[in-house]
Image 1 (cartoon, helix red, strand yellow):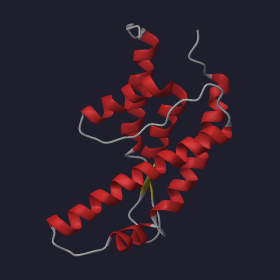
Image 2 (cartoon, one colour; image 1 turned 180 degrees about the vertical axis):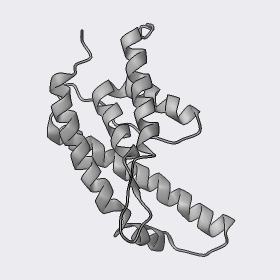
Image 3 (cartoon, helix red, strand yellow; image 1 turned 135 degrees about the vertical axis):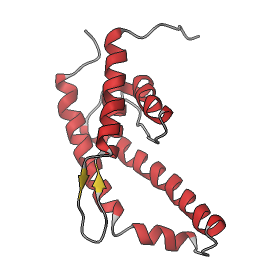
Image 4 (cartoon, one colour; image 1 turned 30 degrees about the vertical axis):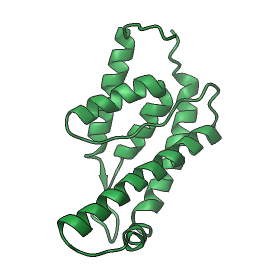
Length: 155
């Protein structure tokens, strides 16, 4: 049995803050050789889930999604430690890439009529995108672990 309660002003502000950080993260671009850029958007999505928890993190990402963009959150753990955060970040990374590879496969094979196997699509992203996202997962887990000690949802 669940109890419906309204969000507090603090929770609404935090959800709005993380939705804004996710949007701003899309514009923080780090130039990468052999690639256009690398954005910090994924880092803020990870932090929203880790710091706000599953409910508020979902609300913040849903607010961002509602304005036409896509995001993913990771669940909050009861007693978070760095390894839990890191695991959640990598689960989020695998889910994100799984959805992205499927989408890219469908667009290339059915819309543009370029016939590519799923392995070609996966291997074309491995050397460029995934190492940077792995670094962001480790950075996000480290930041969440440190910020969690400062920021607690309880008043």
